[in-house]
Length: 217
Image (cartoon, rainbow, N blue to C red; front, side, top):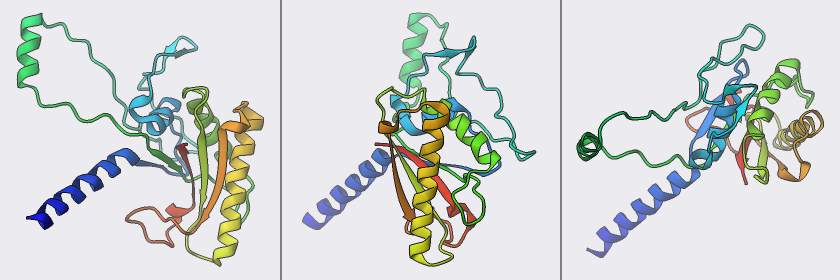
């Protein structure tokens, strides 16, 4: 009996810890994430899209731009509130029969395959274009929101080399966001992870692991 209760308690704790971490959204090297989707991916349910920019609602479902003729990225978890026009009685009946709403999204991680020159921390032009869009997304977050920038590599090559390279790349991203977009330096923390944290369900040597990840905190 006690063993069963302990197993149930462990399962609940695992489920809760998973929901608290949120999901990792992966953006390929030839994709341009929309700023609003960057903010949603990082802040989860805490993000409130109340601002407008240049007269256009940030809720716009316009497709993202292409980078160098690459594949157009799809909106990340794009949702919009729909106003109901039902009478109060009809609303109550519909609410009673409707399924329970899903739990609010937890803050997550945005993993971006930022294009660097091979074996270096030099940002290429496509990388700068991606970071321009990401910077606009960071500006939609709370002004005091801290963001950690993680550099990651695949498993090819010596561990020490990959660790140092991932750290330089994370720092290069921070420098660009601060110098080109005025993001406060104190909001951004960098860390190099090297090859230690490959993406889930991805071979350690896969190119997808060569990425820069953004998360709150």
